[in-house]
Length: 145
Image 1 (cartoon, rainbow, N blue to C red):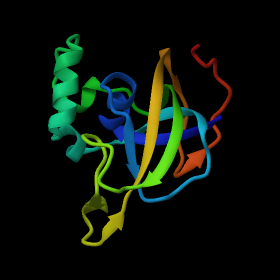
Image 2: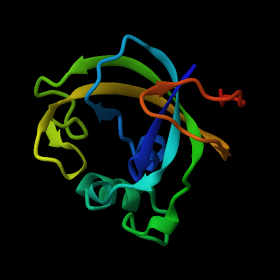
Image 3: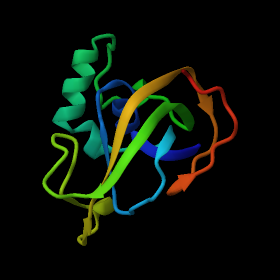
């Protein structure tokens, strides 16, 4: 199994909010189970996303808003999804798929690759661990069925 570190609230949206596409700039050959690790960084762009807001409110059990950093878990594996496809952006995968974005406030537009995610299986309790860039091998933990 591999793992992917994702900033909050995007990691929450993958596990609980119906986010089926993760936008990246690197193409991977790996397909299979993928642990979703919530990194230690918070994405203001994610917190401002209408998609995240709609998912948050339709989830219904939260008294916080997606912009409240304290509403999220950081530095832990939240669950497992199946990575079923990776392909360059081609006007597909809406609404979560993006066509390009400027990374971390820079001016250079990066080519987007869509990671297609299915079957989210949240852990009963987040598994604290350090993350890494790119795909990485997580420590052993019990994978939900």
